[in-house]
Length: 522
Image 1 (cartoon, rainbow, N blue to C red):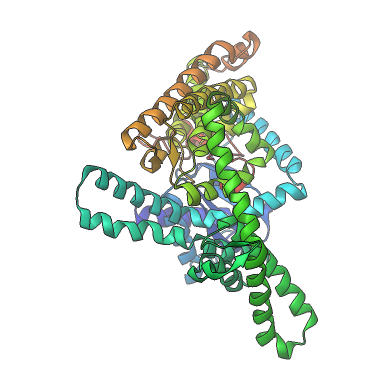
Image 2 (cartoon, helix red, strand yellow):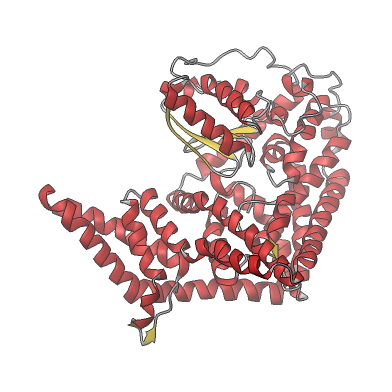
């Protein structure tokens, strides 16, 4: 998206969220603009969803506007520019009427049902454990762009090395791709302290002990430590401890001593705890995670793929998928790739196949078909939330048949892993077709792409067939095919040349899954 389009989108969004005075914070993840709002009643959700660039909205701990990968960074920058310049200070401060809203009754009914399900899931997920998992996931979300960039550079370096091309460039690409990964623990420590209310740089300082080369001279539990031992798990634990030590120290000390003593005690206690406890324990945990993932695919690839691919979306509904992000990151740091992500990505393939079947079965329902047409391109690229909350989940049975498709795709990838052709991803974040550049495996890029592509195709086909033949009762089919009028709402009126535009979300108030960062992408 060009700067002009990004600015136009930002200018359109600003008044619809209550104007600049209503915005307290602006951030973004891979696909969503995340706004901290003073008063959410000032948001005009219907008008927001009608914007061509908006794929959906989520009312969670922050107000989230789904813009898709790539576009979100540009729009966020333009919005920050508007806020800094004061151009949005006089923007609208309340909801505005959307002249195109109110039509397409069947799509609106599905959207309302999806919103109720989303609200129920949000209440159900507001438990201390799930809130903690969400906060842990938020530590890793800002790191995803760097993981993706370094992963693609590593894949390029590997491809050039296998071909024997440009050895000088290959040597240079090594540090470029590995530099961030070697210091990943520091960034995790920094973000952990920031997320849990400590001083970020102190969290990073304590976590840096883990990757310092000099730890090789330190002995703990009868073993010499290894630089990087414990990885992100150790960094997470060390930074959490540092936050608590910092709080306790500030509470006990007078203000005159705080500036000198608090940082010293925090780094000293946190660093020593990391050296003489956390690094060893976290190292054992990280090793266990790696061994478990390897054993799972080597001995139970079919069953593991079936279960992981089929149950990922229900895990998202329960908010439990957040726990997977540190596991993915640990595997990437340990083994160079995570073998779980390509299997979990099959859940999105099942949704795509299911949506295609719904499109054909509801041939007389123009409004639902319009939602599917506009959401399908995003679904192919791994952004499956518009299809889930706008189509399959509100319909009920199609959501189950979509999970069947995901299970079949996961089983395909799992069997390949059991046969010695395991496929991994060198980064977290992308899914669907967008994951191809990040694939890695023992037999090279082409073999990995073939296995992953075979899994996607299996998910598409099984999701389609299961939905086409078992996704509807006769009564449901008759009910949703009764609508024959062409909807007058903006989604149906938009040109076909913009398939990824917000047409999917004029009829989906809850276009994203609970849990924010992880999305429906694993």
